[in-house]
Image 1 (cartoon, rainbow, N blue to C red):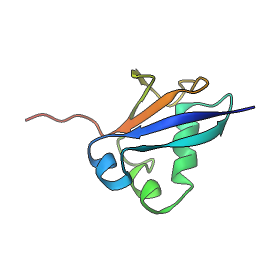
Image 2 (cartoon, helix red, strand yellow; image 1 turned 45 degrees about the vertical axis):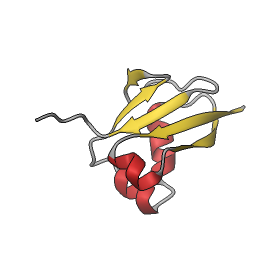
Image 3 (cartoon, rainbow, N blue to C red; image 1 turned 180 degrees about the horizontal axis):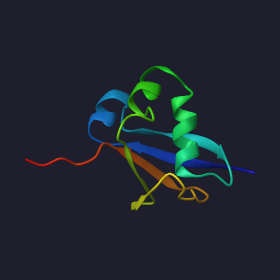
Image 4 (cartoon, rainbow, N blue to C red; image 1 turned 90 degrees about the horizontal axis):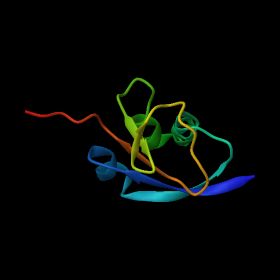
Length: 85
């Protein structure tokens, strides 16, 4: 079974990758599995979402971790950690 999820990128990720895109994924899946799939594309996705980079995520506007399930037709957002100053 597959579902289409909406990816959204924020801050520096948005500047490099655009505001977002739709992605068909097999279910069940997790936020970490989707990140790995995006990394496997290579190019800017691999560079900006690499495992050695601090990237936060949210599923349906709720902070999530790599093991968070991604439900059917979800919104998955990626963004760098917030810094203040």
